Length: 272
Image (cartoon, rainbow, N blue to C red; front, side, top):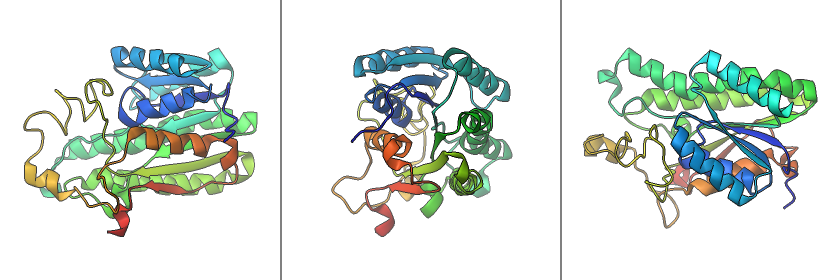
């Protein structure tokens, strides 16, 4: 498939681990100019090196906390200053403040879940969008979640935040449909790195020592079991590169007539 992504400037947030890492490398394989965004500089350097090995026209590490408006402003200003444009924005940053029943959750956890999953998407899109509109086109790909569609017990606010990402995707696609900018989302289910040590960063929920889902005693077993669902296929989780491939498609020339869609990559979990 000819994607037309060679030389395009692609920003991937949360690109140091799991889905973000795989997405950055997928664009690298299309010879794009990839901006790897995250907070863990050591993990970021590994992704940049891998992106160059995969054929990226350029690969740039840019440290930024996308929960900070000032840091998002600085990130986009630096990318525009260096490349003069942004062709693709992948709003991948996401995570969980806690896995707990809503009744015992705390407002600070709600705010953290909303900030990292929803507000980061709004901030980055709001800052990049004027440039895309000015250049007459672009692609925005938001990483949502099947949790937004079927709900994950003990992750009520996370599920709600991802639902808002899906709604935002549809409405923005409608608002700017005549501009040449498409807006789509991907709803993955249960995407787990195959190499926890090599494909995670210090802030990843799958980091083998510090991750919310993997560190010893991170979550009570009965709570973790509650949001494990049965897929229609012979494996229970997605692979990060499968999400990256979907992002490449939605950003490609081949998807120019696709907008406002939520692409489910769920192994048929919604069917079971």
